[in-house]
Each structure stands twice: as structure tokens, then as C-alpha cells.
Length: 328
Image (cartoon, rainbow, N blue to C red; front, side, top):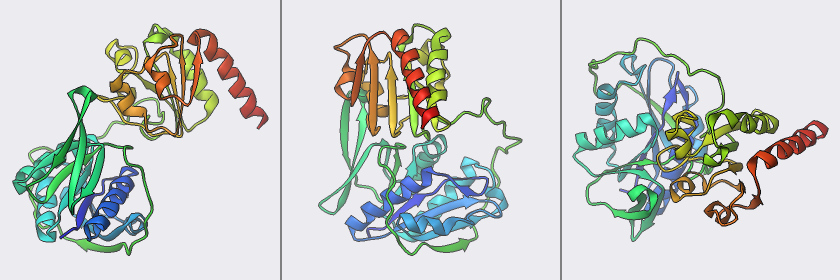
């Protein structure tokens, strides 16, 4: 016992970046339990060509299940395969990313295994030889510590809450035929890419977020100008109040009910700093806050704070950054 299985998500046959975080978490916790980390990749023909790369993040074994039925994510097809692999490996835990796919798949697998499920985990510790998880409750106002009785424990981990750490392991790849096959009740007709082609806020190394202090959607051009000045690695974010007001799309929402980000640099413009928003961005390496309210909670977590009107600060800040980048 002590082994942990990590679901390594893929897209179009290539391993997604979120898989690296899940595998590295599995590796570090399995080591404390006296076991090892295994990864599982499901997909169609050609999937897993880069599977051995997961060894750099602690995967001793990488199982690659290939079959035409796994080309697209169909939950009733994927879940039995994951459950059967879990049964055969005698794992202590199965870890999923808390993505749309992971949140859908994890409870299905837990039900098939008749075991416990904990979702949206933000911390995972090993105490007295067992896993103890921490997850936010009551909209992020409190945190629950969870101990498990059913095994293997199934968990989904909040993205960017743990970080990625390299810990070289063998990364042996084993191609396998899915132990369970079946046709799904639905099928994928086509994929339509989202418009705009902008970087996803959860993957950006720089995030420029706006709150109610921006006063309306028409003022978002100020944030867009700052984002553009910061370069192609920057993305726009928004508070829940902004999204609820219809100023920005839900895909940009940062916080408890949105996305968790961990960029190198985070700008909080006109954001007061409610605990729900802090839950989604407090792991940023450097936080810069702009708010005219000197008592705004955001200044409690900010590394740099500017007390002032965003409509006066933003143009000057953008100009200075543009000049610096052009001269650099």
C-alpha cells in the first residue's frame, strides 16, 4: 500500500499541463506513504507519445490505455476504465485535476468503486501514515480537514493550488488495452474553439484582473491596454461581481467559484479583496493592488499597493511598462 494513481489528462493525444501538477502531487505524497506514483492516460490511437516525460515529475509507471472508444471524453466510457485500473493496482488514492473533465469523472469513479470522494482539495498532507485533505467550505469562509475511511480515496485537486515539482522517477510506460470496453450513450460530433485565441487565465504567467471599481464593461479597454503592454504571457481576469454583472465572461472569473491562478505577477485593479476572490489568487508570486480605498482587504495580501483611482493610475502604469519593455 501507499501507491497513488494520478489521472493524467490529455487533449488531442498530448498530455495537458495540468497533468504535471497532479502527478507531482501524487509523487510527493506517495513517497511519504512509502509507495510510488503511477499515472494513467486514456485516449485514442497515438495517445501517450510523450508519456515517459511524466517520469520527470515522479511517475514510476505510466499506464496508457488506447482505444478508438477513448478518442473523445465520454464519461460512461472513461469511468469504468479508470475504476478497473484502480482496482487492479490496489492504490491508496486516485487523484484528478479539478477541471471540468476531472470534476465530472471523479465522482463517477468513486461511485463505481463504492468509496469516498473529496472534491476541490487545496491541501493534501500525510499524518500518521494516512492522507488528510483540506478543502474550502461555506464559500471559502472556512476550511474542512478530511480523513478517509474508504479506499482507494478519490480526490479532485484545485488547479494551481499545489504547484509543479520535478522529482525524477523511472517513468516506465506500459501500453494497455482498456480493461473495460463499451459504447457511450452520447458521441462527440465536433469541437468548436472559443473565440479570441487569448490565453486562458489559469495558464497565464501574468494576470490583470478587474473588479467593480472599474465601474463598467466599457472601461475594460484600460485593462486590455495593460495586458497588451505586459506581453503575450498576460491574460485578463475578473472578480465574481464583474462576471455576475455581465461585464466579462465566466471563463475569466478568478476566485472560489471561478478559476484558481498562480501566476508570477497578479494585478488586482479595483478589487476589494473578498475572501472568495483571495481563495483563487493568493498563491500568486507577486501581487500588485490598485484601489482607492486604503482599507481594502486586498492590501493585506498585496506585495505592492497603490492607493488611488484606477482611471488615473492605469494609463500611467501602462505607459511606464510600455516604455520599459520597448527600451529593454
